[in-house]
Image 1 (cartoon, rainbow, N blue to C red):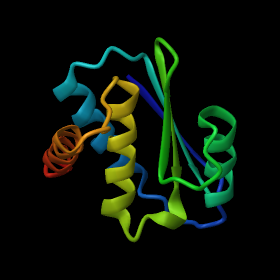
Image 2: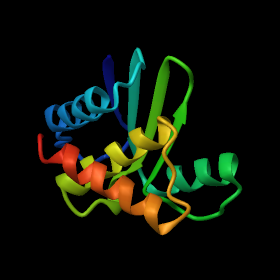
Image 3: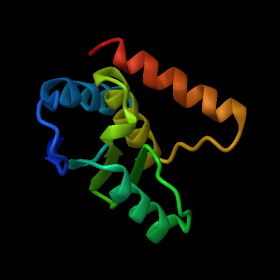
Image 4: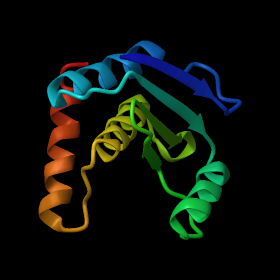
Length: 123
C-alpha cells in the first residue's frame, strides 16, 4: 500500500516515518486491501467544513475518513492532537473507520480504542 502524506498546516516537523509505520501496522493487522492511503493533516476549520459538508455536523472533529474503494482518505485536525502519539492515534482511528469500524456504543468504542493502542505499541 502506498501511503501519501499531505500537510495543509503551517506547522513543520510532521512525524512522517512514524505515521507511515502506524498505518502500515494497522493495514497488515487488519488485512486491509487498499492500494493507497492518502493522509491529509489539516486545521480545525478544514475538518469542520468537511464534517459539515459530508456529515451535516457543524463542529470540528479530530478525524474524518473515507473509503473510496482502492483508496482510503484520512483527514486529521493536527491542532487537536496534543502530541505525536495522539496524532498517530487519530490517524489509525480514521484508518479503522475507513475499514468500516464505528463506535456508536461503548463496546464498539472500547474495541476501536484497544486496536489503536495495540497497533501503536508496534510503532
